[in-house]
Length: 251
Image 1: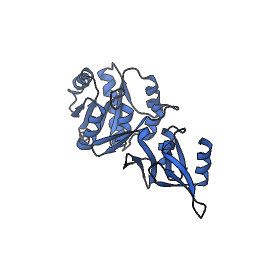
Image 2: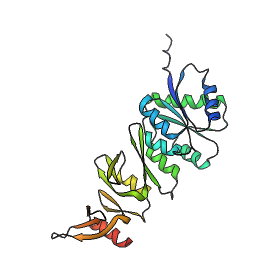
Image 3: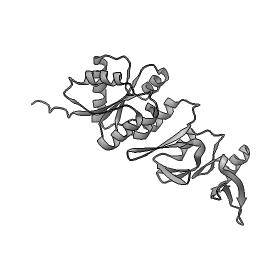
Image 4: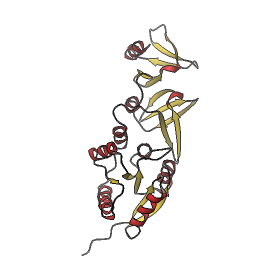
C-alpha cells in the first residue's frame, strides 16, 4: 500500500530585495508540494501575513530595514517555522547552528533549498517550533541592549522606543509596557525583558516591576515602612527591600 501524499507546504517569502524573492520563487515553482501564499518586502508585512494567512513556513531574510529578521522572529514566535536567509552574517549563522535552526546562505543552490525544505517538513511533522525568544536573544549578542520594544497586536506592530517606556509590569504570563499613558501587553517574562534592557537605565524595584530610572521622582515610605517609587507623573510603584538596595546603588 502506498503512502498518502504529504500535504502542501504553505510558505511565505520575506526579503526586501526583489531579486532575492524572484530567485526563491523560481526555485520553488517546480515543487508541487509547495504553495507560495505570500511575498513580503519587509518585516511588518511578514507579521501581517503570519497573522492573517497562517503560512506553515517563512523564508526570512536576516538583514532588512524597519524590522530585521530577529525582530520578526520575536514577534511571530512559535506561530510559524522559519528558514533564515542571509548573505554574510556569520554571527547569525553560529546562533542558528547552536539552536539547530536551518538557514540558506546567499547565493544558494536549488539542491540546498530542497534539503532545507525537507528538514523544515520533518520539524513540522514532529510538531516542533523554534525557541523564538531564546534564539532572538542569542542572535542579538551578549552585550546588545534593546533600543526599542516591539509588541504585536494581531496584524499590527507597536514600536516602543526604550526612552519612552515608564516601567514594565509582570501580569500573569505577560508583561505590560507602560508607554506614553498606555499599556502594551506582550507574551514574555519579566526576566527576559530585564535581560534585554540596559541595567544602567532600567532597575528591578520589585518582583513585578522594572522601572525606568528617568521616571523616578523620589522614594517614599508609608507608616508600615513599605517603600514606594513615586514617578514624575505621580504614579506609585511598590519597592521591595532588594529593589531598594538596587535603586540605592544606582542613585
